[in-house]
Image (cartoon, rainbow, N blue to C red):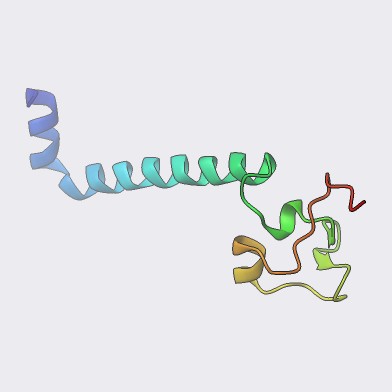
Length: 84
């Protein structure tokens, strides 16, 4: 363990922990953003039925709950898939 790291733990262990958590959170959020933008994660954001300017589902004419926006729903339709 480096002296600088050890001294930092003595001086501000909570600050170091919080910084590490913030960096981890940012990397996870970045990974989810890439997954959603590339279609690897199905969510309202990349669904053919989602109207982004109004943040409403065109199929049900209302804003989906946050859990559905984040995790997807059974009515998901891929924008890039031709149905025939």
